[in-house]
Length: 292
Figure 1 (cartoon, rainbow, N blue to C red):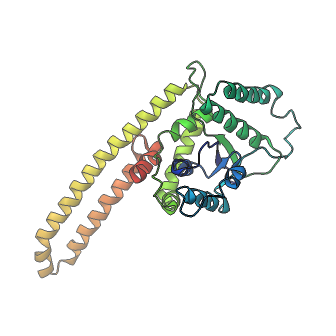
Figure 2: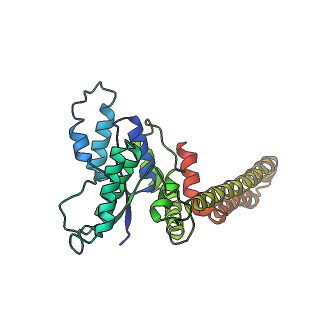
Figure 3: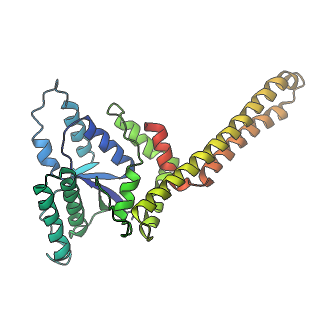
């Protein structure tokens, strides 16, 4: 069974930005868990059809119906191994952190605390699920002495993903992800995330590594695209100049050979995309080209 990933986040506003952020997250995750989602939707049912937030409410309802978002609030499910399965220290520290951030009015950190706690509980409930939960946070671990966790790596990647405009149709997001080549690139990106999560790299080192891979991939594609355009141009020029002569002489085999050469050049470009340096992060590059 393929294990899917669910990004867990807490929202503090009901706006176009919320919808754009969800589009960004769903480019990377299979589902998005939102803390107190049902409460949020219940409290926004009052919006009229002429209200600027009406479409936000309807879009979130649609995502909920299609199981792309879900309420990530703590449930009454039994935790694996009993009430202490999470580890009393970790659980209590998470609760205490949220309390301290509330008292200090640090709203972003407080939202992060709720996202981390909800993901922790979801991953430890005694419920059979086909996904693991990863919190989407605003602030990464800034202590350079501590190695990056999977949460850090995923959130570093999210910050490099495009934020589609609110008028970008959801179908464009789904079509992009369902494209076989893009889906393969997404698998490659997730493999890279898993690999980085097992290293001793620090947060800043992961960020530098990602930036360098993106640079390498952009440069490699620029080179191969130039080479492809030159090859295509040569095929067109030679083809036009010889087409009449070949047709008159019924040299159809040479015409076919020219067409095959063009297809071969295109195939070489596709192969170059798959094998270029930095292809592990090709999905980020392609997503930005499509939605930025």
